Length: 281
Length: 299
Image (cartoon, rainbow over the protein chains, first blue to last red):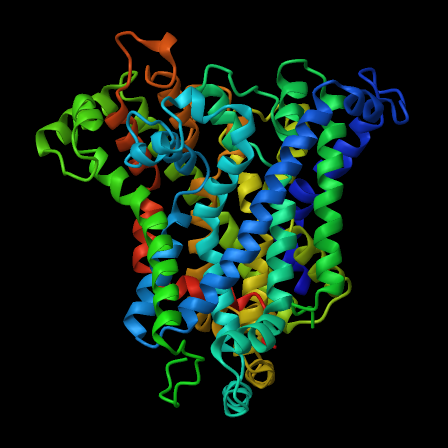
């Protein structure tokens, strides 16, 4: 009978989890005629002149974003947690969290406005930084920090809420004992709260690393909005998309997808098996 | 969290410490609020007013109405089609997600069967993979069976929602006593009746939670429909935004023409594209926080 309960979910898992992964694996190791090709597709995409720049773009974005995320989310969660006025604390969490409703294309579109000095509400700030036109703002060197800001704006609130919940789980006695021993708020944050948050911070870091390697919608829309000042093969996922839809090279697209999928799988499996944050019984 | 035990938070003492914290929080409040506030105001302005007026002065209802008409007249009412598509995909995926994940989470939590642990670990691993990672592989698969362009090509992949199964699993394993089920079995209930007559009536909160997360994720999904649906008639609103963007001269100078979209109209489209999700976010905050933290076990 148990099999009846899991049948639909298992069918979906096979159809949209396991089979596509296996089919992509098959495509990645064959050529256009279905003959075994060894690592030829992988050497082809890695040797593509667009591949290394795309890796560089994604890596630069990830470094900026992950550092900002880990440092700022931790500081903000601890600061919000220290607020004793209840309505103020919950209002702040809602304010931080709300941008999460604007995911994907909507948040990118909103940021296009904000980054265009002629329309932006912070146009003065942009001009202060020496940017007088949209094209100047989105020169390639600025893009990784820009994407990091967009991703932080959308996603940080959810993590702040999670960290806040974790901070609430630290027992009152521990904090009280530390305070009696003369620890100030900074010492309590550094010596008690931070170590207790470590699991959650590494969870956030690993999930964000996996998600960040998938960068697609931000550069895709920016490329469209900038008349291709931003190239349409800026990120790895965009390059895979180009292989599939511009070059009709499904084997090459599958090879890039496979590389990205292996990274995501490895990070996820590492965390499930070693992280100890999720209950599997 | 709601009890009235003495507050144990390490409050920041001293005038300078409090000031620093207050300033930092104020800066981030502005950072998170300004874009949304400005976006809402922008929808009430004319294209000219948006550039020359104070960015935080509200416009007028007349301009809002004009923007509304321009938006919904775009390509003979394409925006209405896109919003309808979004609703169809998100609700379709929601229904299948619930049919698949509630029984599966129940079985994983409260019954024993072969491969149970394997299915549980697989669910967790896939749940933590970014959902974009499987989009191109799913495209290649569905392309080989000729399903590209059909609504099913987005609804079915969206219905595969391991996070929902995991949430249901946690709910059933922590909030339903096994004795209750055992008693029902002794009373002669068959396995399906145990589920439908005992477990399901107690599952309303988790059904709502899974429904919420599934709806938000499907509604906001960009990459999957972008890849699966080549024709504008099939776009959800998230992908439709790219068509509007392509017709906005401010960002795409080559697009000036009869069908061109002004900036406030594009702002209105952005608001409409997130409105259902934004409303649920505002009214279901508690709910959400519970869901976000339910995934992890306590220290």
